[in-house]
Length: 208
Ligand code: ADP
Ligand code: MG
Ligand code: MG
View 1 (cartoon, rainbow, N blue to C red):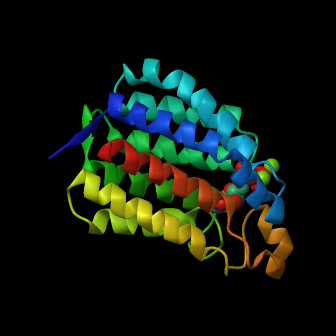
View 2 (tube, helix red, strand yellow):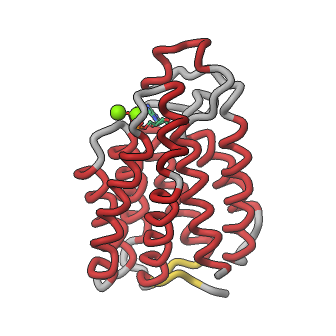
């Protein structure tokens, strides 16, 4: 039964940075439709900074890495997504505690704590057309897939991608997109799209 060390988690964050960079234009065009057209820039800037600290921070173990990565996102991303993803990683760090590595169950506990952190910080629930609409089904699929990390991450990534698509018919009631009300219908939420990339990166890291 495999478990992710801090080095493996750093590999995940590096992969996240590469995907955010590669998909920056797509994330920005989603945000142009229902927000302020900066989500691609926000995510690529934030994860470029995370990319830069990850290897050094990994020397301190999983929690130290996740904490430093979360703080880096909070301090480098101006938009709503910075504090939200930052909180996610900080709560994951607390959940990781002093573990040397995280197996599928421990990573699931950490994600659950992180997703609760996003909900608390954003005062949001699933169905409000936010990143939670990708996180929630992803976490459920991940935990339902059992204790094989590769199988669970792959299931989580598929559910996150579906959750991203399923934000289109929703009416936004949180964040900038909520200013559009009904006019947000028909558009994919940019934060749900970046969350799907984080899961894609995880699946690629643990299967690759
Ligand atoms: P900003 O809206 O400040 O420009 P970004 O464009 O980087 O920030 O991020 C927007 C994304 O953040 C949205 O697509 C949504 O997924 C997420 N988001 C915004 N507000 C909330 C909230 N209150 N709760 C959860 N997610 C939110
Ligand atoms: Mg924006
Ligand atoms: Mg903005």
